[in-house]
Length: 122
Image 1 (tube, one colour):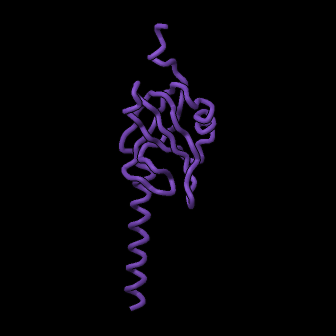
Image 2 (image 1 turned 90 degrees about the horizontal axis):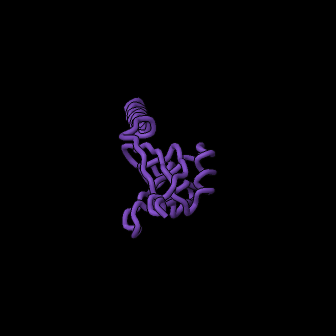
Image 3 (image 1 turned 180 degrees about the vertical axis):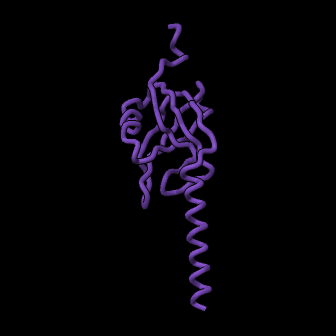
C-alpha cells in the first residue's frame, strides 16, 4: 500500500514539474507593442510581482497588461523611469499564468523609449 501511494505522489510531482517547465520555458509567442506607459507597480500580498499597463490608443480603450520577472532588474529600472512616456515593449507570451510569476501571460523582456506618434508633427 505504501509503495502504491509513493508511486502516485511521485507521478503527481513529475506531472507538476513537467507542466511548470513547459509553462516557464516554452513561449507561445514573442512580439513588440508600443504605447504610453500608464501604470507600473510592485504588487501582491504573498507573492510580490511587477505589473504594468500601456495604453495603445488615444482614448485609453486599448490597454495591454504585462508582467516583469524580478530577475530583469534593468527592465524594471527603465520602466520606473519611463512612467508616463511612450515606450516600445518586447515581450514573450507564455502558455498559462502562474500566480507567483505575475498576473499576466505577457512578460516584458526589453523596453525602449520612443517618440509618441501623437506628437510627431508638432
